[in-house]
Structure formats: C-alpha cells, structure tokens
Image (spheres, rainbow, N blue to C red):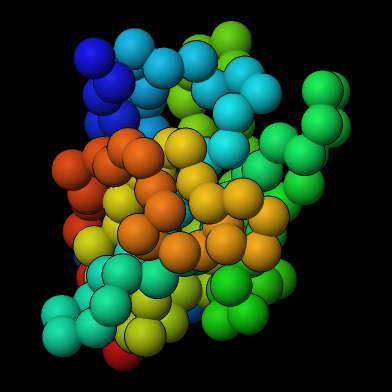
Length: 128
C-alpha cells in the first residue's frame, strides 16, 4: 500500500521560507516521477514542481512559471523522501500542498487527473 505523508507546512510572513517533506512508504522514489501540487480554495489543483524520470539514470525537473526561481524540488532516495524548498513566499502561494507520485508523462506532469497517488496535504499560509 502506497502512502505519501507530507510535513513542513505552516504560516509565514510574505518573503519567508518553508521546506516541505514527503515521506513515501510502499513506494520507491528512486527512478520514479514525483512532484508537488497545490490547491487554493475555489481553485483547481495545479502542478507546482516535479522530478520526472525520462530514461534509465536520467531525469529532469519542471516548475510552474509562478514558482520558478523561488521553489526547488529535490529528493533523497536513500530516505525515500521528496522535498520542496520554498523561498520568497508570497500570499498567492497560500494553498494546501500535496505530494504526488506516478505523474503524467512529459508535458502532462502538471495534470492532476494523471496522478496515481496523493498525500493527504499540508497547509501553507503566507500573510502579507
């Protein structure tokens, strides 16, 4: 049984930083496509960042335009954990953040409907 458990959310001021973690069990992060999505009230769930495996030993990262240069996705396969470092946070970043595994192929990395597994979410609130 696949379980993705997020942690690290919280409340910060405009310009602050947070680091989200996603611990995976029943699922090996090495060589797999994983990412972070977010959903604000009244809005659709959107892809934030992803690490996509494109070939054996290869991969690439993707970011939503709104977070490029501010957010960094990484993972520690030895710990089976995915991370999202969020810097220069803005009030518009306020949302529930979800860890995702088994993403859409290539350019569909950000499509929520293609995701196989979801975590329960962790709330990020940025006050201005």
